[in-house]
Image 1: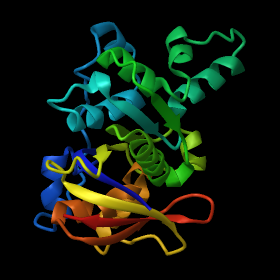
Image 2: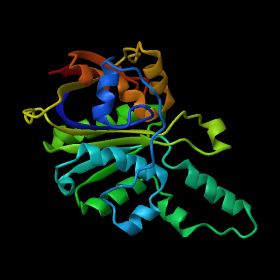
Image 3: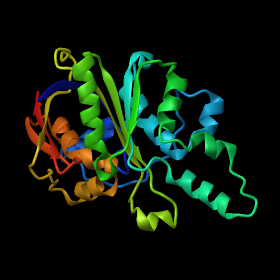
Length: 261
């Protein structure tokens, strides 16, 4: 069993534009109105990199910047988790190769790697701290949380987890259906550093079924983007509701999270 704490949260999804505005919705005090997210310009990026940043990178920065607000991000180890990365770039590169000219945009080539968001984060924050980027299909939230938690436990240092995905363009969208762009960031720290903690967590692998949300609108959001598979955990934090949630994970096992406040 791994123990750690949540120090801060960033969240961005239709109707949940940031953690402060999302918390009343997750508590059931306000209905979810899935208003589309407004465009976001990463504040930590220099102008040149800001222009080059693709929607997936902007989606990641949106929540990462919220979670580290007021902190020195340059010292934080990071884990970035995305199911698909940026399929729009894949589509444009494949389309370019299908043409007679076979000319690939240098910017697309620059952004085509799966760890592009982590690279931009290192540039923007000046960080030389360790960074991991992974993918776990629809289980990317739990995979990222488990990886980040293991790093917190092993190094006894804070880790920033950023989970993000954006829908693919047609025709890829038909093969990989995703309802919306969304992202979530958790600033995680050792259990001993819980004076400012929003919640303390205990993680373990489990054969139990994943937690389902009773609110139909929130449950639709949970299914609409892999980054939102963590909504049951965020809902429990918003409600300060001690107990257990189970998140979909890989390898025929799920990730059980016990929360304390």
